[in-house]
Image 1 (spheres, rainbow, N blue to C red):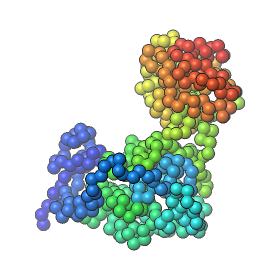
Image 2 (spheres, rainbow, N blue to C red):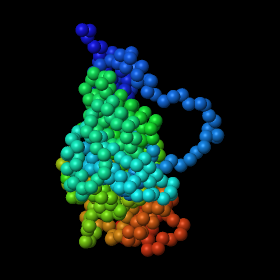
Image 3 (cartoon, rainbow, N blue to C red):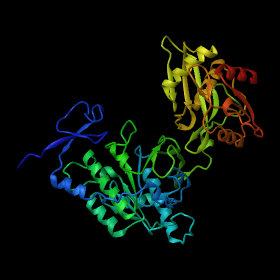
Image 4 (cartoon, helix red, strand yellow):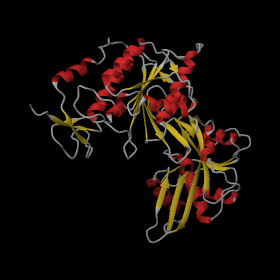
Length: 469
């Protein structure tokens, strides 16, 4: 018997090479080549035969642009992340740590969609249960285990159809026969195609199975949700090309020891990216949190040193987040540690604080934390970080009802943050009364109950805080 030819496939870009190399020649990533079995000519022919037919060339101005119809999932926070609901023929990839709640969330969503499809929806531009029913394909659990979970979630009479199968051809045949409106594949790493000899979960299998399922979704109109594993670094396992093939990529974040979970949109062809949904894990499954700012603010009876509230933007939603800092005496090599914020940016801000505001932390350990497990990537948190560090260093709390936001440059200037008026209104709505913001974000008309101090430089912000204290 002839020995099967092997190739090495890059898990980042999907490129192939006939022999192993330390660095991928296509994307220059290191240690990403994984051994697999080379495809035969017949396999390649079958794969390309499944591609969509060639469409006619059309002028862009002549193409009718219409809003896509959506199916609400019955979970407002999930709908927010998806951009309003599930889209017909869309493919969603959701990943997260084991036990974070991916299967629970999707089972609850399918049950809510199934229940809504039993009634008669009135046209509002949304698909009310279009297509009739849902399908949950489980490759990691048996049907009895899924049923047991549904009982724990209080879904005793759920009409969601369940298929325990990992073979791609049988899954595609079931999708073709039942034509569900929405199908969940849990998970894509367990599905395998008989045309490939590599094991389920390999780069070739994941790429091949995802391609066929995506093609099935586009041709039939079924919305397919793929559940993906994550690596120890937190990225989705499998080839990076998988994220390019799907329409929406969601990340399930949160500590398994914490009650709260975040679903973040990294890519969305039908909605805004970086949108987040906030959920609380309860005995009856995941429940949406209508006021997420409450979980990112610590409940202090009185102001404490080292705490400063900022208003960040997550997609279209302004959120109030408490930034906490602890400055303590350090040794010859002081530590710089941040949780939820960029550590390199923290080092830069400490240098700006010393150079332009005269506050030295060279011999101090500095620890900064964003409360609630949220991750803040926007630079608008700079001013709040500096004020919290100064508050902790001097041992003096900031005034009650105080908040700040703004980007700080290396020259000591305070730059405006986008959509500053929305941030101010959100803080005022939650009872905050004093703000230090960039001068460019100062509103032209006063906001009731809110005193605003507009600053242009870091030293001005420090002077304002000293005056308030």
